[in-house]
Image 1 (cartoon, rainbow over the protein chains, first blue to last red):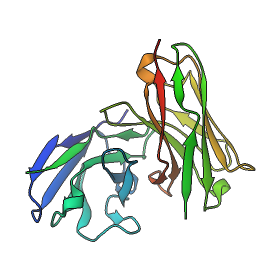
Image 2 (image 1 turned 180 degrees about the horizontal axis):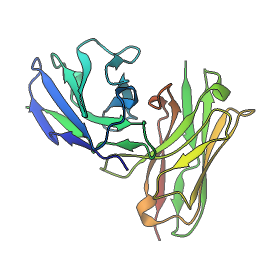
Image 3 (image 1 turned 180 degrees about the vertical axis):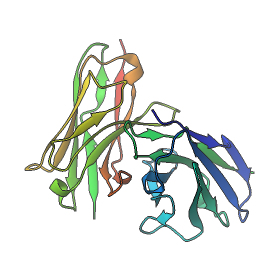
Image 4 (image 1 turned 60 degrees about the horizontal axis):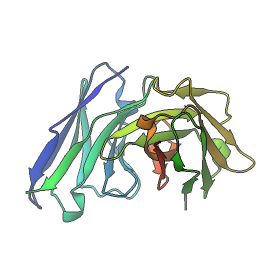
Length: 108
Length: 118
């Protein structure tokens, strides 16, 4: 089973700052099979990024994804108040599909 | 608009069974792979199962492989998850999701809560 390790577990930042969230994959899965989701309390997850670098429909361009080998990064260039949430990475390249444990982005 | 609406959750005792449904609308259901994902209270997302667009290919997480069965009825635009031998640690919100081209989940239902307790 492929393990996805997200860091940090909790990220405390202020609106307007830049957020960098990491997801390290234990085995190569191919960048086509890595996605990022945002989840707010009491809500279903929402797809942000698919195939490592592609923004989903309706996602603001302050969200971006990048990859270097088995290290994937979600960057939020300038935090808005509505961006404070939990973020998950997800791989679908090898069965079983797995999620990272999540990064909680909280207001400092 | 794409809509996914789960139902069938509730309170059951350990060892009992439950069938969840996910009613899909706003897209051509038979053209998409579909997924089930769950989230225990205060915990992260856990992928459970997926089914191909024609129903011929299914896969499961190891924790549920011998107890849960995914299926679909394209005539009813509905996805199912049959859950048998439920355990206390199956307590979670269960989400259905539509599969994207490379296995990501592009649309999610609002979830249905399953509580397993004696």
